[in-house]
Image 1: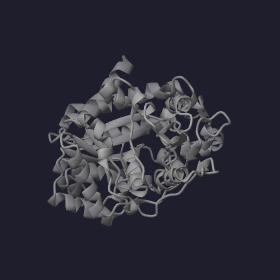
Image 2: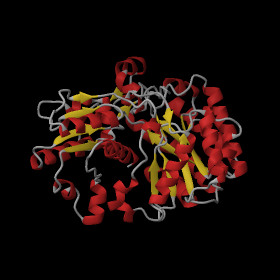
Image 3: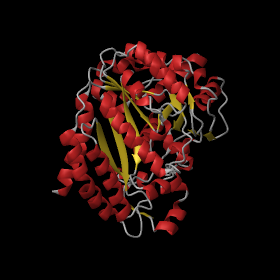
Image 4: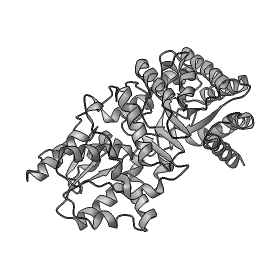
Length: 445
């Protein structure tokens, strides 16, 4: 919950306020009750995180419960979905007083200040009000998660943000819904310090530290500085995981990542040049794919674990483009003697705030795309309904699912059979690949 810790730390540093963080799932694990700890307290302001659209129904139900039990509280909501669709929280029956669009620190601070001064804010929707520099943030107060510290044991994954924003216009991504696209990072020294402080706060969690930035190390000078600092001051964790882009890295980066104890994820999204353009992933697909192929070879030499994510059935996809994507991945895997990476093949999901959501009519007219459940977050089965998309006139949802499994199952099987990474957290990375293989096997049978 690094975003909640950042918000709580900001409010605690600027206001004379008692700040607490509650997680319903964690509450059930430590006490058997999901929301009673929150509802039994006396609060002036409660902010709910609707982190993604999958959280919408649960957040609305929780807000109604809070409103019925804590009638005088000022209730706010923020996250990716409120940023993309603030109107979903602004109707006359909405339990929310305020909806925060984009980054939450400044708007939430204004809400708290208004409540403390007895002057409620007139605006229902606040933001976007992005921080100019995230070095303005106070040190993260991990003691805000003290009540859950017993859950952070050996083998668990800890999450941390070192930067905000992503300037790349990928059509499938919710990130543009936050409105703050400019990449901003902690200074290299501050980034390393925050990593060390998190791991010191939860010393029993020595599994994987996951850097949850939308794009890690956009600036090459920043990236090299951070990795160089970590070479000399190794972190007390088995592996650090970060996601970046193949076209950002130079020839020295793979060895630098390895020397700093990292594993690296790459959002390749498709092995087909036409689809990479439709996805707005890159303007030079050939170079983009060639760069990653070379990096996979370099990773094999030094033993760096890596992961690749592909999307199957993005609007505009056809059976032919999906076949070409699978063939590109098959060729790449076959070219590696001792592959150290894993592959995830995700079905396309329709996300509010994405370019596909914004330009839906364009995709319908150009490709024959059909979003079968356009308001899936309001339905009973959002996990499946978000995927119910006919990508094009020649690839409907059912065909997409059959091809996703049949085309990629042999590639996954080959990669698992020859997976050669033997370093720290091998089970973590091999497990991700095994899960994909098992899903394909069960679906095909």
